[in-house]
Image 1 (cartoon, rainbow, N blue to C red):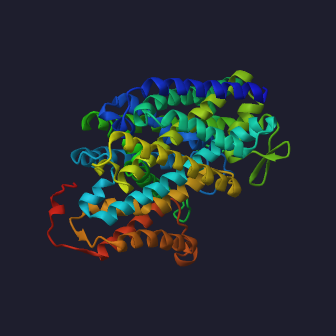
Image 2 (cartoon, rainbow, N blue to C red):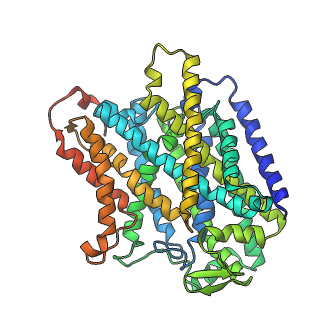
Image 3 (cartoon, rainbow, N blue to C red):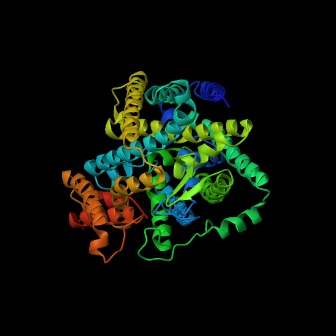
Length: 509
């Protein structure tokens, strides 16, 4: 299929998003942008969150992890260990964090830190969210933009820089006015297209290989692709580490993330928000299983079409197609044109939910937490909107710079990069919230809080780098986040005291 035809469908898809944004953003105000006026339908939020949570990383990267040569942490269906952990973590969010957020009527979840500890803790938590979400969102964006570039736009002579700029302008155009109010609807639309793309690809490959799901699993099992649990305690993929680590990743990257919680607290009441989270957690398990199944089928398919093993590489016409290159290569070079179109629509549907939500959440957090937009009584609605739009545009520029950095670094499987970065950047948030919820102690709120949150990731990095030497061959993997959070927790305990304070009146458990 020609690159021009695929690009036509990309442009048509974007036009559809703009149309939805126009209808949903009419009569919007700042509350619409930040929390959707607390009128979001829980079913739409739950469904849309699937797309936000999965993103282009799951759509492209997870299928590529299935082969035993695709990475050091996951082999076969090993990533499903993390998914089990996610499922457990979402229940903690539903029954511990959401009741807290609703009881305090938070617009920004980091306002909890201000009420519990004080100004510096609040600003530090907000700062780490801004860093965490910016890095994570731009890594996801880079992955999908790179696929579009390699398989479509390079053939048209369009540079990666130009592609990135245009896509970010697209996202800016349909989010700058409606914010969360718009995103609840566009995410629902995009999640639908992404899941359709997944199901169509699985169905076609099963039919082409003359398999059903049962016989496909048997064929994959013979190659070792369906192995889930890693029983080696020294391995980075050890099942206990993966499940516990997955639970904490879900708690940190969803429950302590303004982007994800912004949509949850836009639901009318706590009960509906909890229904949203439980529904979302159940569906996400099934969808991740389908992506892993698709990955195994893609390896079977490409091996039948001339690919050969070469050590830890899978070579096709002189090119290594493991990891993130697997799904795009098969979809755009081997499958029928109709399937290729569905893949492209599914891919960009996976791109936009993670990017638009991140851009909106970062704008919200910066305006509310760092600029104190809602507390500026001398600013009228018009001035607040102007400031919000400037911040929104500024984060678009930051996204552009970060994507260029990822392009310079490049990586064969971006999912490993994202999980590693999350361990470093979300650890301090985990430590701050855990200390506030699990203890009644007060801390000496000041710059020392920020210092502790900066030192903890550095110590964590050193521990991981030398873990094999220090701990008799033990390798730190996904539990990186837990170690980082624990170090932050201990640092906060060291500067805490038991003096009674009005802040203790905040019920945190």
